[in-house]
Length: 417
Image: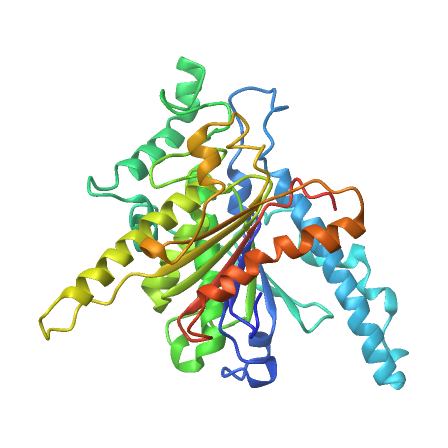
């Protein structure tokens, strides 16, 4: 996720990367600190479409997480087989003592525990794998939307927690409103790509809890034992967080495109408020432009820029308050897909923005293009897409540091593989 290795969160919507020493130099001395941790949160399965039995037009559904888990199991199986082959080549005498089929897909699926837990589980129990580079954690972490500082940082406003309170009420009364009004979504909000049920708030709060726990674990891996006095006991170099519902279409108080809370923006706020992250990179890889995330990033950067200008112009010797974070947002998307499919000028313009420095903004949007062959993709398009990483590297102009975190947000539901 960068050179040098940075701590990071990959969320497919779900994740984080932070400035990280090499695995052999992990300050924690914990072997798990060298690994990538996969965080699974079963509360995310509670968000369901209940308005009718016809869900043919509902593309965001619990089955997405099952598909992601299947893909993760296959990837882990391949990693295990690769590491097994390498170790066998290095130490032939140990090969006969270990069965090669032990790391096959079925075994990996069993360890992933595809089905949700039937009973309560301890927060983030780990499951043994044959690979030393990946660990799986079933987390029960959750937050309260009305009491979490990072959630309020992103979705609160000068009028208080009006949006958050409304969201909780919409979900709580969803079944009643469907019976009486035919929809659980209030007037003024497009109901075609939004839905709620009584379990939606549990799913949203669990998703945010998983992201924040992953950030805490990732930061702990780079800052040593002293940073973990009240943090996770099992740090990790990187985290992959499988969560839903998604969030990148949701602005401060504008739910949109199956998104009600912007998970990645809340994660960035948590990293800033709890761990002092000042330089934050968000890479958004999706068929759709993350209009909500970009609008939130713009607001945060604008506030930080104004704070910096005021601090620079101040003639007093009194130390000014620490400025807010600077955030780079980079998106790779299809300009003909949602939310730009209707050609609305404001949507297309936002999804085409490229600005780096002026007005304190750091945003890069790159449009996906058709290609006729793999050779054309790698020779012509891939170098263009890499500009997303080049712009992120330029943003980190001060070099690596303890104030950097990288988020990579991915949607895998439309991926051809």
